[in-house]
Amino acid sequence: MSRVAVIQYPGSNCDLDALEVLQKVEKTKADLVWHKDIKNDNYDGYVLPGGFSYGDYLRAGAIAARSPSIKIVREAVEKNKPVLGICNGLQILVEAGLLPGAVLRNIGLRFACTWTRLSVETTRTPFTSLAKKGQALRIPIAHNEGRYYLDDAQIRELEKRDQIVFRYVNENNKPTEEANPNGSVDNIAGICNEEGNVMGLMPHPERASLKDLSPDGQTYGRVIFDSMLQSMTEMSTRK
Amino acid sequence: MSQQSYTVEVVVENKPLARDPEGETIHHNLILKGGYNQVTSVRAGKLLRMSVDADTPDHARGLVKRLCDDLRIYNPAAHICQVRIVG
Image (cartoon, rainbow over all chains, first blue to last red; front, side, top):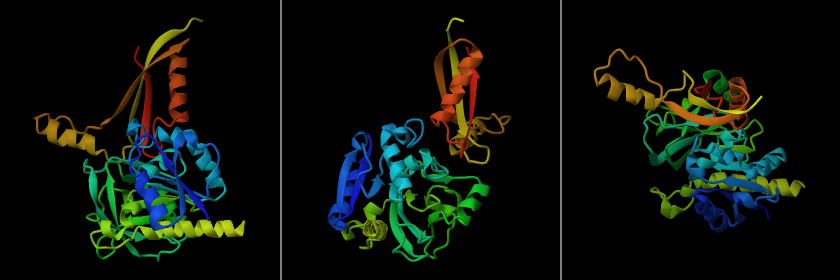
């Protein structure tokens, strides 16, 4: 069976939630690993969880991006293993240069803590392969720095290369300004690298994976973990 | 040449096209409401002041410029970064 590492940084606080979902809901093998204890690429996939890291000093994720654990994550990325960054995990991956762009302070200067509706923009990634293109997922956000930014020309490049994975949308699945909780350009909520095996999103799928924790009793976050685990299983059978 | 201590400031701010809600709020809600209408814009950023041992001011500035790029003190996708000697 595949094994996932949830990497814990000083300040991570959604690490145990992600671990719980992987172990108890997804019934997969997962370890919580302190970032300094990752010495080798011994896992089939990695989750960089939400929360904070190093006080988010300088910029959210900027200091964790220099952690030796990121060298191991880079090795895994080169072997085409899936790496999922959630919230602070996305910020770390962006600051490490494993994902393009920047994540800036929310446009309203408020900590945004609410349920959002996301549209799946591509199913080519190992994190959305079991979803349908255009499918709506209701997943919550909780962040102060979640405004995804890239200039217009680079956004067009992202679109061309199919690297936009999730957008914030309204009830009619339109990416309107009202549906955008933080001022992200083009309502972007999640992106991937060119290969598709590194994906980061600001919303928290681990908080939408248990019926009891969702206001509508749905578990929309699970499709991301289900897809990731299936892709890992496929990779291990191909070995 | 003997080493001296130089003070080097690094200023990081959003690129002109990346909105800066903190600067906008300071401008609209403090400065304009306070009657200082001559101020037409405000950009908020981050200031790092470093003490650097170097032979010359140029070497001190060069070293700090290099570390800003090397350690990603700023994110080139969204920020501009100025490095200046102040003492």
